[in-house]
Length: 624
Image (cartoon, rainbow, N blue to C red; front, side, top):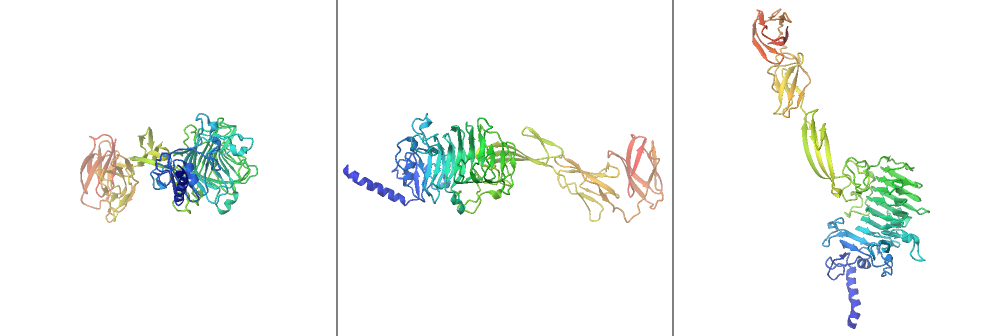
């Protein structure tokens, strides 16, 4: 036993010394190997052990499961439960969402593989014994700590220090995340849920001087605050005091049963906070609804807002502020717009307080209403693709940004996950019954079914008017016409524009008139759509010949009409045809010039008849 006591520290030191050379430390609560953190099979079962080992530049990969802190901020075993916290380290990046067998970070799924950092201590039915800060940062950092892909829950904020000594602000603020002392951190892909807020869920205190280098003390990226919080008489989701904060693609939903609350606030009277908010959805909603606040901007030195969707009041706009492409709902307020434009005050775009679905719908205000130029530059390579000059091109669900003509306003980018397109052609003026409604017009109709982060399933009807080509081309010599409607299923009927009557037998695509005049064509296509062309002029028939003139007398007539040719210039037979206006052939023959022709019409019904004589103008005969 004495021998074991002497060599055990040496074994531990050798093991830890080997691990120091590694850049990745593994954590899996279910691991059963040597538990030295060197691989998934030998992973630590405690995140606290991995944090104790890690140093600047290391990564910690954490498999799904629930992890509870066991040390206080000094790294000492807890004396009381509320002292426990996961204290992040400078330059150490911690990633959750692993199944426990991945070889690359891109293989993880933090939505499916929930990795929970919990403040639950003692009696699970009594929240008051839970930790005061689930995650904490302290110290003057020069490189960023990072927490990415976790669920944070069950912190308990206290209204005052539980001891005669101690700072009340410390115990009230940041029951899930508490940062102070000039720390620098990136919080990305986090879900915040079920906690008791003493003053705030997230407390940020930092060194404002970092903005001179273009970086911020704290980056909050792709955060979601779920329903289910409780709060003392007042509280905020984020309390940012004397800190530089940049928040991107986050849903901050305030549903707190308190008279004073907001999504984000700064309550430090001496100022010193700088905010930049890009493409966030901020929702202030309380039990009384008339007290909701999306933002409390008291004592903020500068607040810049780009492409945000806010519902709730914005109070105390007493600082230097800019806004671009904002959507605000609730009471009017004053802004110092600093030479920028805004969409401003409008009606509520949704009412989904029970479902917590704030994704844009096809018909909502924010879709394609942002401005893509205000997407922030990814200077910290948040998507880890190696490019720090590109604009951030993902939304809160890691779906691509700018799926339409412009970026959407708010945390979510609308996109279509599955689309079933049905193309239909209808005649002009007709309607089609589709998905419970009559649809008409040359347009596109969508019926969408939300599938959350997978995008919408869309049934799409592309309704098009079946177009008929009504143009007519004359021959090179101008002696016949051709319709340009080439559908093999189409039929044609040519019309004499002067008489407004059909021309018997003229039912081909190409039409050879027997005389000069104006003509048009009625086309019926294979769908049964019918349309009529404009009248076109044909002046070139028989220009080299003198046209023979014929007359009919009497006209109108009651039974017989005589046809003759005054001033006959040609001594030859002239073929003729007599048609009813319905296109029925009544009689055909020839007029043997210079003799007259008598036509007996007594057997016909009263009406209008058309006499076509070759080489002459048509004659309209009225039978009374």
